[in-house]
Length: 225
Length: 280
Image 1 (cartoon, each protein chain N blue to C red):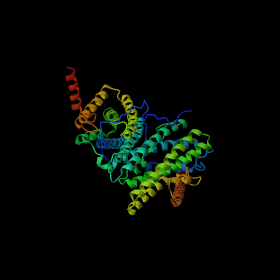
Image 2 (spheres, rainbow over the protein chains, first blue to last red):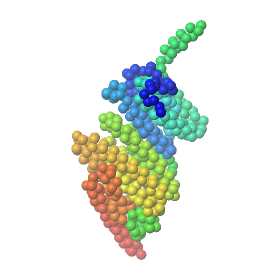
Image 3 (tube, rainbow over the protein chains, first blue to last red):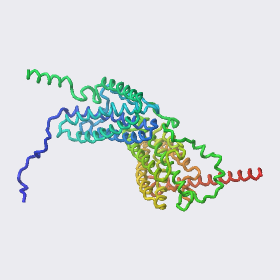
Image 4 (cartoon, helix red, strand yellow):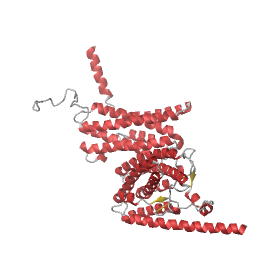
């Protein structure tokens, strides 16, 4: 018979979660507000594009993905008050004007012959960056204090990975001539430059502060020298 | 990309053939077809044309689902707050996924029933109702009138699947029926919330719904008699939030439409007979 009064450690040996994290409550809320804004703009345009896309398989996949991104926006909307932002609209903002320019460029194509341009923007530029910024947040935030955000990030990331794969496979099946390769490449390059100018979905520092990392690396190098 | 996409710009591949609703109504072959005594229009397994009618209806469901998907998607995009609150857009995004599944189901059911994309024509009236510039009218026209019609259609098809010994058809229609009840409830909920302080706007929206209902009753397509291919599904409509008064009013409207269609067919037949006698 086990002794149920025998003390056990609060954390099992395999539970390696730690308290420290990169983000304060305010910083986490700011990022979550940026995510919600970007997910909203994305689900709106996916829904709007459905009627403009003649390829039946693409049309139906976009219908499904519209809901995925709306659901992510809802997750972030519900998280904001838990991060002390009682007016979620206040933080539902783009990080800067350059990011608005980038999202407007993503949403620009309309004509039925522009399916490659539409999909390239979403599945080769924007969604890989959602994966990157969500992964950065997931890996950097406190695994104990910010656990609810982590849970939502994991749900969102699962969709992002699957949606990216759907979109990439559709693109590969649509890009069947060297000219279409050029079209997709040109579109990707145009949008990546705009994204670069914005600093990312959460603005500069979306994937951490490069300058600080460099300083840290230099000090390690000088110690070794 | 612009807001408010006209129905003429709906993107389709080359298999799809588009017709206008008036082309169908004023089809010169109509009087001759009306002369044939093919018995009750209600889809019954004992009717010789049941297979053909069910395939045609299945194709109609398929193109209707595409347009419902497109309409819900456009509602996500066409409006900003406060015209369309965030929660309304979330509902429309959810509806996009549902309609997308319905398209997938309809394509597979079409294969199963022996038809294919493009075998029948597509009329884009459903999307036209989804183009209304007022989101409340759009929701009333689509989520209450057309999704309500979908309840009737899916229930009729489900019954047909059961009676004809087709468990796949019955199974799929039952699942789609569940989604449509949800969509009608969304429409009723948003009608109430968005017009809480604007009874005039509510009345305009309900009037628009009645117009759309009347158009889809044309020719006695829907009703409660054997003459109507699609039967009014009162129980499921109740579940979706339609009142008994609304159901009675729709049934009355359907009877009027059926009677008008019968009178038009009789008049056309008489004209046809007179001209053929005069010519002999």
